[in-house]
Image (tube, rainbow, N blue to C red; front, side, top):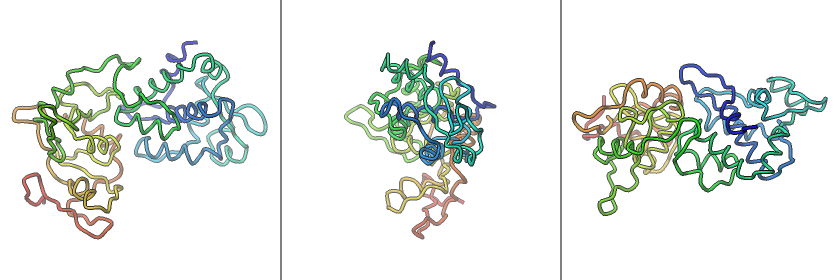
Length: 315
């Protein structure tokens, strides 16, 4: 069995670039638990909360239930479910999964393969991360799933789509004149830019091309917030800030909530801005909730600055 090819072809609901990482998230969690206890089962009632948190944090913006991947992953030959009545899942009903004592774990053949070749787990995890999530989230996703893999933060080869274009970073940073498109940060260590990254608007894992029209130069903080759906790009190339974001410190206000409504900085004159098709994908598939309005009051009762990048009030 070629487990990498098999897992790379997990059956998922797919239409028009919609994200559906439910099965990959469950499989990452199950692999993390396998590292801790190779023979242990995952009783639905015991892991439901953990799985729901993974889906809420790293799944699509619309709310869903872990009952779906818990039941449906068994059809892919990598997962099995048993209940107090015997083999087989009782279905996708949350109540049925809870009351039947439904317990899942990796399929016997996959568990055996992982015991024979411990590096297989590393390769499977890397494949799942590359196929379904941007590199900025790999490290924290492994931590959230209970996986201990130090390499997870690095970018590189994906068995599914080949290599990224190594020119992407330099092209994007040059187009944006080596400054963050959200906050204007332009730090250097000597002559070398530091803390600046080329962010994909439409994730590379979901067909996002390595072109300037799908890129933004962002500082490390705003890159992470962009990939987590805290920040987005609205009409008129203005910054969106999710109403779900909460921060009480002056830093949170200045670096996040005060960005609402500001125009993006860059690209330089004659440069190619983010294409609407990629911006729209990010808004639908990554951005969380409704955007915060410029000047909208925060949780601590203060108003956002609501100023544009030139210091004037955004109307």
